[in-house]
Image 1 (cartoon, rainbow, N blue to C red):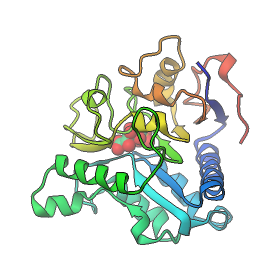
Image 2 (image 1 turned 180 degrees about the vertical axis):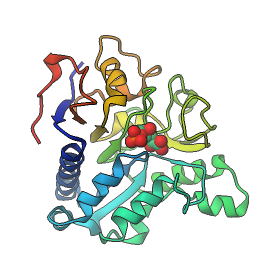
Image 3 (image 1 turned 120 degrees about the horizontal axis):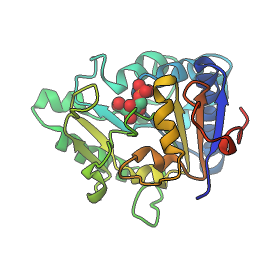
Length: 262
Ligand code: 6PG
């Protein structure tokens, strides 16, 4: 297995700042190479701090925002103004301050579906269609090659809304409805991209913070590789960078520590 870069910072503030710098650089390089950059962002508690760094000087001035397409790896089945919405934090903390053209902000259309009485399957199908219409290169496995995919990792080893032993693997649709998980909060239905979108991405950035993630990080970087049981191991690949604070990195094997610089 070719390992990812692993970047370990003393504090969570240092880690989110480093992650924002990596995202800014990756987006800028993708625009330089292909004219546009397709960025998939994530949910949970981690991206808020990253958004603030990207929205403030000096990083804000480094990214050609008018060339960025923004996508979500997953979102929760709640109205867009609900605190649980993965899109809400992005609107509040990033999109008010950076000029991504509205038609390049690809929110999962959950608010419209709720208003129309449609369900998560409808949103998943629409999102897959929108992604297909973006005309991205498709990899050998049939999945789109997005430029930068930001992921967090759950304490059970999930990424996106792909939980351990998820049935999404056996369904080739690029976006899928996920029933509300019972083992982990928040207990609401989701819409998620297919896990193999993470495998197909040009670059993956995984950001993991806090002592509550140390045990699962130790398992992810342990000897057993089983992406169906531990979906976050999809990001344990070449072309990925893991940004952790010391607390989350406590169980990273010594031989893997210190493989990257900020
Ligand atoms: C979600 C996610 C999910 C998240 C992880 C980590 O909607 O819940 O996108 O995959 O990234 O659960 O969440 P934290 O950043 O809160 O630890």
